[in-house]
Length: 97
Image (cartoon, rainbow, N blue to C red; front, side):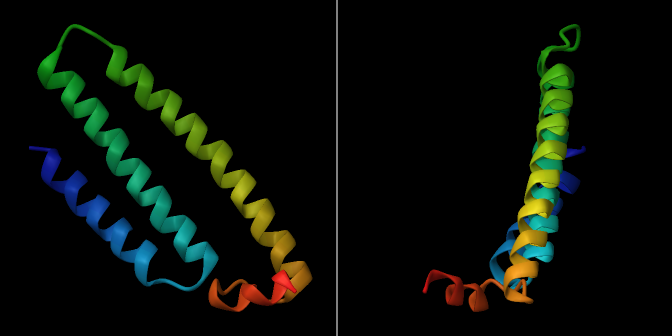
């Protein structure tokens, strides 16, 4: 039942990750994919092992890791914006030279 919304969320995240040029939009798409995976962990845990809590604990751990990853990614994006005044992915090749 909940696998269909998770699949739609994941597909929207993949589409946004592939088509966006802005690093913030790419980060949001990545977070959307991670949240869809977390929903799948909880759903599979509920249906395969209803008495076990490993899927729920793994989901909470994944949410904590995603929050730390988002904070680090936003810090990197802010530093890139300060040095290049732009956060488009295709324009950041200028930083290589």
